[in-house]
Structure formats: C-alpha cells, structure tokens
Image (cartoon, rainbow, N blue to C red):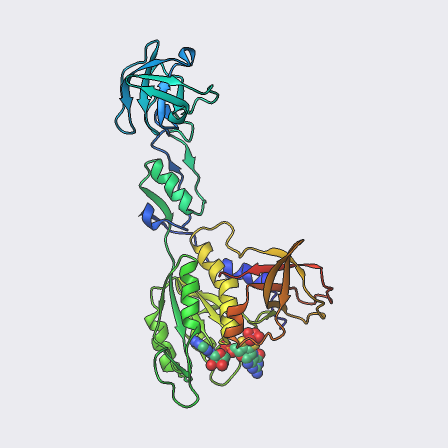
Length: 395
Ligand SMILES: Nc1nc2c(c(=O)[nH]1)N[C@H]1C(S)=C(S)[C@@H](COP(=O)(O)OP(=O)(O)OC[C@H]3O[C@@H](n4cnc5c(N)ncnc54)[C@H](O)[C@@H]3O)O[C@H]1N2
Ligand code: MOO
C-alpha cells in the first residue's frame, strides 16, 4: 500500500471534525475562540460628539476671544447647557461637547485670565469625535471570526458581554511505554522521562482544547484498555508512541478492538511516518509516533488543525511563509520532509538554514529551531537563495 501524502492525510483528519458545538461564554473566556453567531453592537460609539482634547469648547466664529468661561464639562459629568456668543466651556477629553460649540481648543493653545480665555494659536482641526465615528448600534462582528484581544475590547465597548463560540474540544492525551516514568520520578534501568505528553497537551490547549494527560500506560493490552476507558467522553483521544511495527506497539490493535474506524496508519512524511487517525465512538482518535520530534511535529501539523476545525475555524492549518535557503540542499526522498531550521534576517529578507542533524529523537535541537522547512516528497536539489516554504514555530 502506498503511503498517503501529507495533504491527503490532513484532509482525512479534518474530516473527523464534527460540526462545532455552540456555547455562550463571557468575554473573559472568549480569547482565541471562534464566533459561531454574529455579535450585534448595543452601543453607538462615541454615544455623543466627544472632546478629543482637554481644553475649551468654543464657537469658531468667536475666535480668538477673549471668551467668558461659563461652564465645565468632564467625561461622565457633562453640561447640558448651550454655548452662547462669546462663551466657552472648560472641557476634558471624552466629555460630550456642549450644543453650540464646533471646536475644542486644546488648553496649550489658550491663555486663561480669571473667567476669560483667549485662543493664542489659529485653529485647524475641530478636535471633536463625532457621534458614531467608531461604530454604531446594530453593527456586527461577524460569525466565523477568531476573537483577538482587540476584538474582546471592541465587543465590550459594544456592550456585548457574552458571545456564542465553539465549545472547547475535550482532548485526552494517552502516552505509554514500559520505558517511561513521569517527570520528577527516578527512572529505573532502561527508563526515560515521558516528555511528549506534556508538549502535546500544551499544543492542544494552545489550539483551544481542554486537555488532560492520562496516567502513563504500560505496554500491555490491559493497561492500554484501561487508559482508553479513562479517556471516555473525550472528543479527541491522542495517543503517543506504540504506533510503529514493533512487537510492543499495541496501540493500533487495541484501538481496532475498541471499534476505531481507521482512516489511515502510515503517511509519506518525515518525521512522523507511523501516524494513525480515525473515528473512535462519538469522537476522533489520532495516534502520534513516539519519537519526541515526530510526536510534536505531527501534533502541530495534524492535531492542532483538527482541534481548531472542531471549534469552527475556517482556516485551521498552520501559517506557511517563504524564505531564501541559506545553502544548497540535496534532492529529497519519497516523504514530505519537515526540517528543523534556524531563521535569520539579511538585507533582502528572511533566510532559512536547516540543521545538519534531523534526528527525530533530539528535543534539544527542536527547542533551538525557529521554523520547519517544508520540502515536498521528491523535491529536487535546491540552490542557496531559492525561496522555500516554512512553518514558523511558536517562540
Ligand atoms: N522497523 C521499523 N522501526 C521503526 C519504524 C519503522 O517504520 N519500521 N519507524 C520509526 C519511526 S519513523 C518512528 S517515529 C518510531 C515510532 O515508533 P512508535 O510510535 O511505535 O513509538 P515508540 O516505539 O513507542 O517510541 C519511539 C521512541 O519514542 C520514545 N517515546 C515514546 N513515548 C514517549 C514519551 N511520551 N515521551 C518521551 N519519549 C517517548 C520511546 O522511548 C522511543 O525511544 O519508530 C521507528 N521505528
Ligand atoms: O517518522 Mo519517524 O517520525 O521519522 O522519526
């Protein structure tokens, strides 16, 4: 069987996402989430013609004065009178501009003497923000938007305290292997510390999921069955390791016994060939390979897009940018290759330099990388300076 391409595999993985489920949340919980219903402004902003400077509200025709200061208007404490000829009102930024005034003169452009104020500099701009200059009641933040910090401020200003967003997928992370112990424990002979589960859960949360790490499973069917049982209720079960062909790689067998409908189990990708995906009960399952770099890279390229798609993201895939190669590269093999690389800026733009060692077990090297250089399967030899696609890594 020929292995699937990365694009084919990604399409199948995204196909595992069911329609996003709406949930009403307060703005404080809405960062990074996808709006599933239009949010409609309840406010017009500013709600009145507002002063943009501290100074004096005056009638342009009366300038330069002297003008009699007859009132004071501060933000939140307005003056509801009207300016007559030859009159000025002391005013502060954000206050409603009194009727009759058509300019706010900043106080640096005035001279005050008792009740009288004289404008000392010719006035150009009005320094008045007209009512509705920012937005109006009925304006809409459209469904589909991924909410940024600025969007939260906009929605708050619109007096929309709650929004309908995609529910956070519940993700269970299942790592296992007799060689693994948790961080802080003392490893026995032949044992190492489990690291992938932490990274994968963190990546799941970064993509918007509620992630929990299950207790480490052992390399027995019983232990794995218990772990899958503990994952009940998850929208997505992500296993790590045990995906390859070794005698102790039991994940595929146990998942199949539990009724997993496998979409694929092996893709033309490096690192990450033994990647598995499918439906499991009401949810989805992703089986990531155990090598740390392979687990993390496949989590970025498949798990995070799936989690985003589950919340309704229209463009769940990672961002792809382009940079010039720092040095020549030999032709690629039959798998799409994601090379750990450094980025730097030179006078003409971004330059990408893949590391010499691409061993998929080297976490310390991955933590140095700023990008994954993407080389398609069968990519021919490349010359320094050629533009190549890359995926920036989170810093
Ligand atoms: N005969 C073959 N052997 C291997 C193949 C193959 O095609 N034929 N593929 C290789 C590739 S590529 C990868 S990637 C690995 C994937 O293997 P598994 O998914 O079965 O993973 P394991 O064997 O369980 O573990 C591999 C490696 O990763 C370490 N590991 C596992 N889980 C964790 C964890 N939670 N934290 C830290 N490190 C972990 C594990 O100790 C192993 O060293 O298979 C190759 N072999
Ligand atoms: O695919 Mo493995 O993930 O090359 O190390």
